[in-house]
Length: 271
Ligand SMILES: O=C(O)CCC(=O)C(=O)O
Ligand SMILES: [Fe+2]
Image 1 (cartoon, helix red, strand yellow):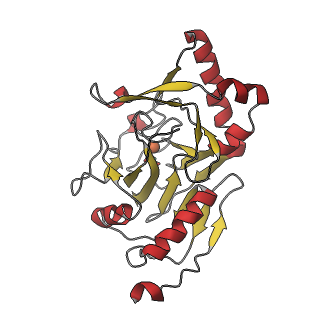
Image 2: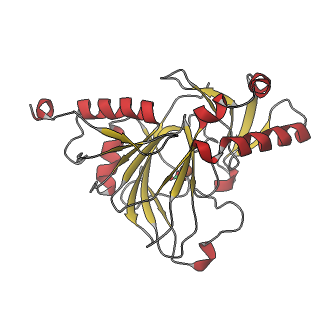
Image 3: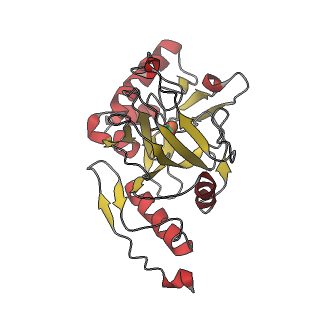
């Protein structure tokens, strides 16, 4: 009865040209029945990223919300104290993190989540707990647009290629995987580039210098500003994205503490 009474005329306002929509007037601690989740799923397939502001959810409530979307994965390095299914993403207030040299292992550098996993998460949700006064945005890049705007000749060249992704940045026992360079979204059928500078090391059956040059070319193209949206966080924002469609980059330009809670929803094997 309560569920049927929910008005699911959820309104979604685009947040950029490349992707994303903002959903107002939703309280996910209350409105998370099947119809709401179904509508959010549809919106996520259309927009690839959803910003749902003003969500007050504990870590356990976030995990409960996440389970409505599918099975949750854990992460090797970042477990929340209340549940293994929420990742606690934070840093000590320590200047050495600002403008971190190279790629910071957690979220710095463009990536789709956990592509080193054999069945990487299709959806990630990030919930803002504590934010610096300025900075700490997250950037996103639409990989359907990236794929669709490649030269025809490059699209043909990469059509059947596979790439090796490593999880060893998180520890010697974390798995590695091989995935197609072009991923077909299993729900929309749309193709996307699926390589990233954090975890993709080389292209299979390709001489190493050629593999390196091709990956470099793809990495540069895939993050053109035209494909991006940059999210400026407010406390209690919940942002969900589809890892089959977008890459993201946590921008480490701040000194203060920034804390996020995260859940990741398991997917199938990319194809
Ligand atoms: O902290 C962020 O903004 C994003 C970190 C990240 O890459 C992730 O949560 O998957
Ligand atoms: Fe990430």
